[in-house]
Structure formats: structure tokens, C-alpha cells
Image 1: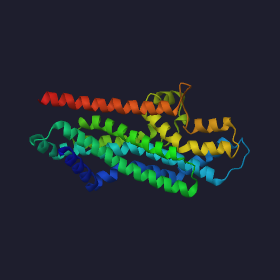
Image 2: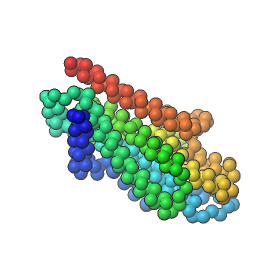
Image 3: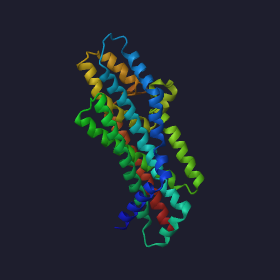
Image 4: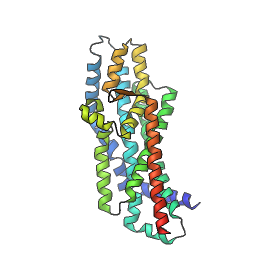
Length: 300
């Protein structure tokens, strides 16, 4: 029961701290602002360039369905990690405020404290990401809906794995942070850079071959491809079946917008992306458990 109380305490503190809550939303707000100002036109123009050679006129709903799918897949892919990092900063905040010292003298197992930080961060992040996904679904339904029931389910499954991916990595990093300056630095670096390296702001296919192949070694690349595939495969299927787009054009669009990813010219399927993401979560969660096990052993 003590673990549940600690989880509830951490969740309440996160939402009570307006600064921490707002900072967790900085990255998605930046992406929405970028989209509203010029990214939408860039995506629409890029889409038109990809289909110019087809010579087929299509309804605006197909364009909206594709572009909004790209936007919200990017939003979920980057937010699931950046929000997890920010919500997990409570672990560092307790060290700065000295609250962790109170836990040290209380009859609470250190393992339960570590679990409470992880679970609270994961739940907070899932609440925020779920709200983002639902808002995205509402907008997509009003402009052009092409998602199947299985797509919707897999979007939530992928988001859950992404949140755990971000929470496990942030738990490892935050374990070694002890000051307000370190906490601010890590939050800023993650919020400003993760969107680029995961392909949320710009398709990785637009990068140079060296950088594209280098990013292929990062699990974040496959996490983004995974969730983007579920947002976009419905509209691409409609373009092929209803608008008579040739397979070659669908393939070009998929490559250009990172719906299909090739690692050193080898195609990586969505099943492989899912396995990579799942394996990454297990790996980083295992490292976090090992760190706490060694710390508790040393303390004893």
C-alpha cells in the first residue's frame, strides 16, 4: 500500500507544480506552432510533389487525412518521450528539496520509492498522451478519417510502449542528477533535440545518407516509424484502392515521409519496429532495475 500512496503523491505533485506541467508540454506546443505557421504547407507541397506525376485529381479529404496523420504521429512520437522526461524530473526535484532525505529515514523500502517514481511518471505521461491522441482523432474525424479499429488500438499500444521507453531512459538519467541546474539542462536538451533525431520535425529520409544510417541505430527512429505507420496506412490504402494510385507512387510517398524505413537499403517492417521498441523498453527498464539493486545492496 505504501507504494500506491507514493505513486499518488508523485502524480499530485506533478500536476500541482505548474512549472513542471507546463515544461512537459513545451515540445508538443512547439510542434503545433510550427505546424500552424508553415509546416502544414511544407507537408502539403511535398505531398503534391510526390503525386504530380500520377495525373490524378484527389479530394482534399485525402490530403488532410495524410497530412494530419503525419502531424499527430509526430506529435505522439516526440511527446511520449519528452513528457516522460519532464514528468520524471520529480525524482530530481525531491533530491533538490531534500524530500528524499525524509524517505530515507522513514520505514519505506528504497525499491518501492524507485517503483513509485517510475509508475507515477508513466501514468502522468499516458494521461497527457491519451488526451493528445483523442484531440488528434477529433480533428482527423472532422477533416478526413481513414483509421481502422485495429489502427486505433495499435496507436494506443505504440504510445504506451513509447511512454515506457521514455520513462525507462529518463529514470536511468535522472537517477544520477542532483541539482536544479542539471535538471534544467537535461530537460532543455531533450525537449530541443529529440524531435529532430526521431524524425518528428523533418522526415529522416530528407537527411544525408550518413546521418540517416546513423539514426538507424537509435530505437527512437523505429518508434516513430511504428506509430506513423498506423496513422498513415489507412489513407495510403484508400489512395491505392479508391484513387487508383500505382504501387510505385505509394512506395515513393511511404519512403519520402518515413512511413517505410530502410536501414542500409534493407526494409524494416512495422513488426520489426515493434520488436525493437519492445526490446528497448525491456533493456532500459532492466538497466534501471539493476542500478537500484546495486544501490540498495551498497546501502545495506
